[in-house]
Image 1: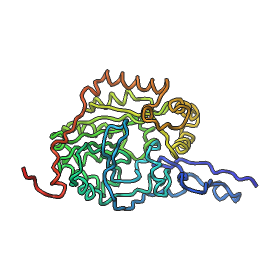
Image 2: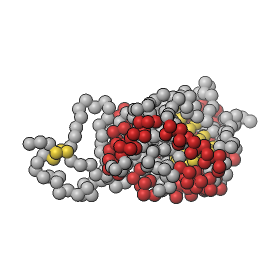
Image 3: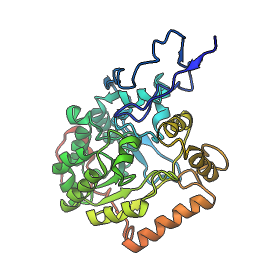
Image 4: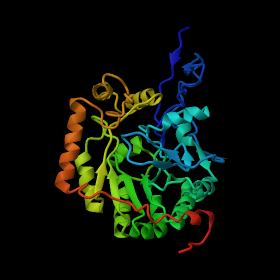
Length: 362
């Protein structure tokens, strides 16, 4: 008897449809119908949707050090591993493989919270050898994903940085950043904070399947306005650009400008490691008619491959299609007025002693 593969079904509220195998697994598995019709009549909605599980870990270090020439920050900090937003395109998904977990459903349902990260950061900031540089919060997973509402780990980090007068940049899709305006607004007035909100598309239907548990596009625009009205410098990320999927870059930039954003940046889709087959699954589920065309354009921008890690091209790609996206971005930014002034944060106010709870001597 021949094996019949069970067709995939999209899962409501999740970006991935399967627990795709991670690259360190020795065995590959595929589901199939065993001939007893056990699954033949089962509707996609009958199975229980995977619930989010949160586990805790004690971090050994807080800051990651960046020396990549195509990334603008020196230090990154991520309070969580995994991200419930479930963005199907997230380049961080393959990092779950190091935990022995799937970059697919596990990445968005098995969240690891670094419960002691504020204390570890305080120790690192207090070290005599520490040189203050802007810390980018949320460079891998979102610091304001849903679980933060209860755990408040990100808030603990921001409270520490405010006390130390340390510059901070936040990248998020979560409207929860508004909760911390009582900290971020005074920091911004002192030249110590800026927030960048990612808006991939204004199409609510597309956003629901592309980044299912992130704030809706209109809600992110309102977050930009709320932050801007409070005096926080805000920017917009229109990343990633995916050919023939999110094609409203100019409209997103115009809406973000109207909401108060004054800086903007973008990247094109990148598909490292397990993300490539995962994204193909998503295309097959949601855009089967155009899947081949989307992947052809991605390969065109990546030298014929799913991904090219070369620093010179990994963010914007290469070739005619990548050039076209870049030209669209630059023309829209010039027309609207984006990036005329760089957001500069002040490292000179840093108070090392405050990291250990000491009062200022001056």
